[in-house]
Length: 319
Image (cartoon, rainbow, N blue to C red; front, side):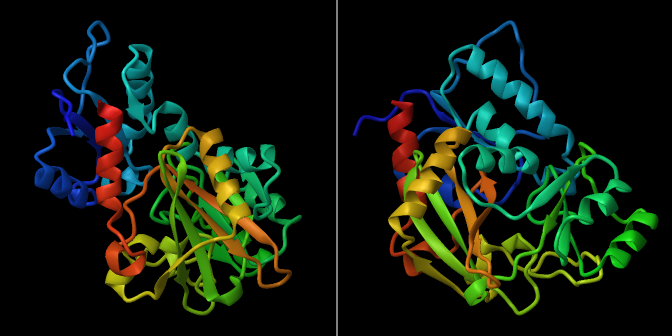
């Protein structure tokens, strides 16, 4: 197939996550350039004609690596590119949703899809009144986050009050957070559904250790007293870290719901996570991701290499 003459730009902040994609491009001799989102500048008076398209891989967890400044910057840069008519995969709309858990819940509400009950706050002292109408346990999670950064679980209002008084609640870089009901996972797992080009690609079940689930499969490491521990497991890294993960095909309605979510969010490559509440059997969507690293050891877990499919998609879009 004819390849694009101009390189594909991969705009990213994390130094390691996307090596499988780079390796796939190298294998194909597909021209590409890596753009460091944490150390970047652009000229508003000139166009970006150096690449055929830009694939946005900016991470909302950049702040935990000292690159939080690049998150808001990225929104401006993506808007600039789109104003020039540059093809951007996972553009400004997608990244806006990616970087706001509050907007994610509003989007789910607009689509009539169920999600864990939550309140949005902008000061740590508001957590108490917000939690008063929720069922404990609850979690407090920064609005802008990723990789589970800053997510805390509380079993009682007293525990939450103590954390608020001790200024242990992390509201993140925009001073906004969710106070959200904790959901016990039926079957001991959550499900992550991935899309490519806005269409269903695959799904995986990620099995969790007992009493260690707090609404983000990257956080299978939290205590119940509001103490945040180091990240030890991630759904996408599960085959490498020993967490049990299996390929899974969701019912057609769930696949259709996920595709609706991604279309509304403007996300072309990403994942949606859901959980079945063990208390009442309700299916709840809880996380919308424009950043997807794909599951580790894809050929064994899901039967194919998702990076090869991704490279196919990017090459086609670049042409």
